[in-house]
Length: 310
Image (tube, rainbow, N blue to C red; front, side, top):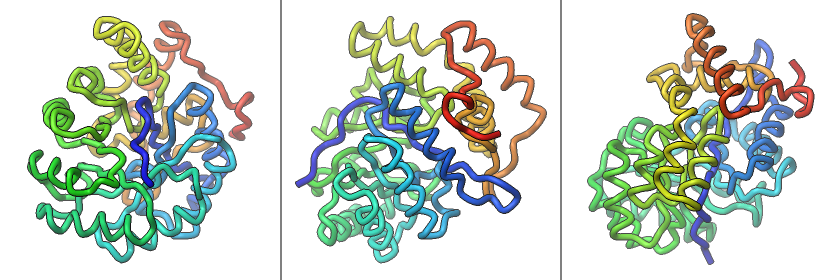
């Protein structure tokens, strides 16, 4: 039996690497996962697009999942990289083997513009393994665009879908259409850029990565307790950092550098073809973190408490 995902923040975990060979840094994986649990995240999304899952070997994927399971008690959504059914089945089986009953679902991207093919793809994964499915509509990553009506029809045909991750801009418009038609929770992504509008459109929360997830949590908590004005006020201090981080082509590099400067990962390296952090942005990164530390008390210099070696 599948259960819809609980609302809130499902943090999309970066995969930290170390050394010249860019080996998976399990210690930093654990530190980052524990931070999400400590600040109150609902769950973790591991091996997503920004988790660089496509660059990981199967054994490395298993190591990342096992590290997260050992480090926290949070439920896990495991991202699947492949758009084809047979390799997706292998990835899902690995996730189920490692995560076990902590597996809240596997995340599959919309793999075709033809609804029937997507339904067959999702059904094959669910029927073989019995896992819930998070359907991700992220055309920038998948290369597949699908009308919102077709996306809703896919979910209606697949009762085992436990959530939709909507990342086809304009996301607030897409989410409003989906939530009006579906009972399944719909989450925003894209680093939190549209979070406030997405909540107004009926989003259940955010399933995304951001170097200061405290801001996403503050916004959603304020929305649930006090409504729009409070949520806007809670998110405002973080918006310049969200904007800095979500720049095309360098977003991953900027996020990892911010996480490193916060002491949440030891090194900021990303595997090719991802680009390196542009040092020209170092003053902006430093200034924005300093401002957040002053304005909202964002914790910096966490490496000593978190056990991250630098």
